[in-house]
Image (tube, helix red, strand yellow):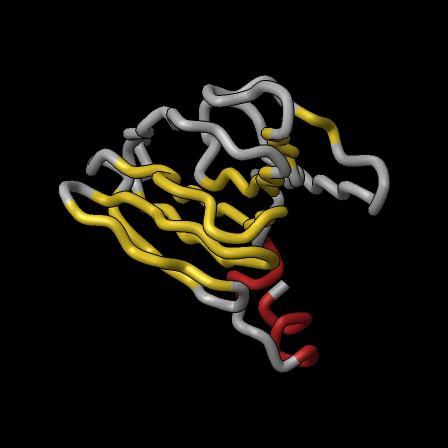
Length: 139
């Protein structure tokens, strides 16, 4: 095996990489997204799973959120890890801790999930944003 690794110009350990791992792959085709029930779900508030790997080793949760109707009350969210938002369409005021920030199409924001956060005011409808939660590795 050592000779094979040398002939292939790769480290010896490269011959064994991935043998003991199970690799998952999730593809979500355009038009095949699954709407999920999420805190805050309701008329005009759609949440779509973009391919989360499920199970005890879940580390990332990508979601598409689409808000098409104004509402007076939004839930605040708290969770372990960090979250990244990319505003794809519209504009909103987004609360984080005791402050709020205006976010417009093309803006991004990243924050710690343990701090209370969520939409406060919808400024321009519809609003669509990509949310990626990254959870701490608990293993």
